[in-house]
Image (cartoon, rainbow, N blue to C red; front, side):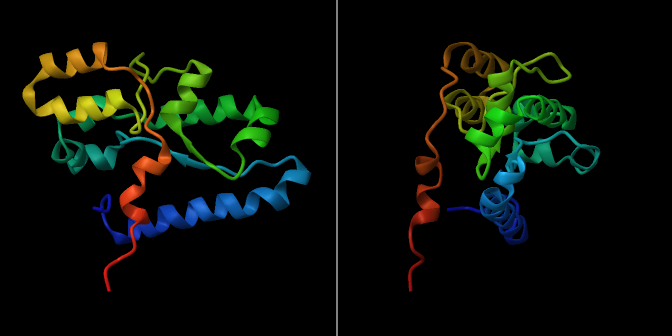
Length: 161
């Protein structure tokens, strides 16, 4: 299992996930949902300036989301409070998956695929082969998400003593 970015990033993500899960139950009677949002790679000024996305690979650049994308999804979720309270509260919500549910596109007019999507995995894997291959993956590989249990399987293995 290889951490994304560094230890502090992973610990911070885990803490926010736990906060969302633990806060959901006491907030529910007040009509408040608690979710942990997972955007994909986000095209921020910092990421652009430091060329982080380019270092992560052409597939990451192709799938990167704008900060506006997350904002649009959050706005849609606020307008769908009852469903979010019933189905999403206490859970991780992947921005691209929620955007698909609400029919939201990013500022470039495109639907982004989830990092759990077979299509996203294929685009990442084929990015080094050139645009023809990534275009092929985006057209032909289904946008079906891999279950969380498979995504985190390596993290569930106990460390060796």
